[in-house]
Amino acid sequence: KDNNLQGYAPICLGLEDFYIRRLYHRIQDCFGRPISSPPDAWFDLVERVSNDNNKTLKRTTKVSRCLNLGSYNYLGFAAADEYCTPRVIQSLKKYSASTCSSRVDGGTTELHSELEEAVAHFVGKPAALVTGMGYVTNSAILPVLIGKGGLIISDSLNHNSIVNGARGSGATIRVFQHNTPSHLENVMRENIAHGQPRTHRPWKKIIVVVEGIYSMEGEICKLPEIVSVCKKYKAYVYLDEAHSIGAIGKTGRGVCELLGVDTADVDVMMGTFTKSFGSCGGYIAGSKELIQYLKYTCPAHLYATSISPPAGQQIISAIKVITGEDGSSRGAQKLAQIRENSNYFRSELQKMGFEVLGDNDSPIMPIMLYNPAKIPAFSRECLKRNVAVVMVGFPASPLLLSRTRICISAAHTREDMVKALEVISTVGDMVGIKYFPAEPKKP
Ligand code: PMP
Image (cartoon, rainbow, N blue to C red; front, side, top):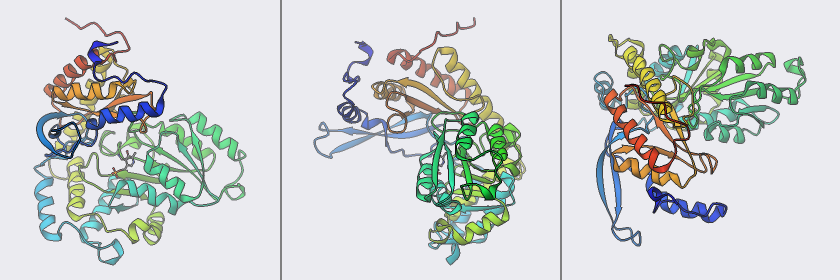
């Protein structure tokens, strides 16, 4: 019925299968677009233009310069950086792009050792192990930490890599309501008698798995409460800081720093380098014994090629900038900037009447669309105005909880954000997603 949505809205709610197929036919162009530049505040997006109604593969491409509201480039390191880039180029010349070996078979350079020391020191743990991919870090390490006879209690909205690792471990899995420590405690109680010593429980061990910032919700983990439930029931805490490390906390050290949790109370600290550090790979940080054990047993360490040296150098250099070891105050400025940008953008969206998920300080801000028919409309209308957004639909979210997920970076200027807000507001009116009354503008 909405004229603005003509040509977009499939009107067949209820016929789920047909609906999904039809919807996906229409939204193909919202996902999987190639880019042809670094994923900085602005990037070059390649639009595939079909020449003949998709009947053959003949396509031409058009490149548009777009404001990038979708990448996890939180601190702006995923672009040429005056400190990182020259060092990365040097390391490429020195070590080449790949070690062509696993860590134990000649794939450990001095750079890899330096990287693990730097990561352990940065996150506040005695030791760290770095792998070539964040996804693999969860999916390969959880099965090493726990197996049959163990219990994993997992947040209901944990990332797929955690779900995969938990399933692959063979442990029993229980799920607690997203970010709800009281429900975690209920699940604990249902599965163990209170006060039973660790050695007399029906489980060999219990691991509670949570994330620092939830990537589809923008919410910050209620870590202090979760840690206290785990202490009470003698369970281990496994924290995935993919989105929080480098992005929040006064000095970028993540959710522990932000919420005043002692890192000694988090047994396994996991994270990735694909967000704030502008690189790739993942890490596990913990006690020296834990890391030593993983080095002997983890398949991703023993059988996978080690992280590419230039990617490792990017991480080392980014950490130096964040901690000020590069001799400048750029790191502190970036951290202050991402906080300021995130809080400004979130509050402006809320004032406009959007339903925005997540917490203050979180650079991730999903705006609810609900109806998946609005996905292609929102994405294409933004794109027409040179703003690129990430759309989240089924199966990444429940079918009727579709959303657009905005990621703000320290690299966005106030001017960029004002433009983005104007476009989101206009398109938000077109597709009808301002669910709350707007706050009157101050004169
Ligand atoms: N954990 C979480 C919470 C994530 O959001 C992601 C991916 N964004 C990963 C792990 C996997 O990390 P990577 O993309 O670096 O492989």
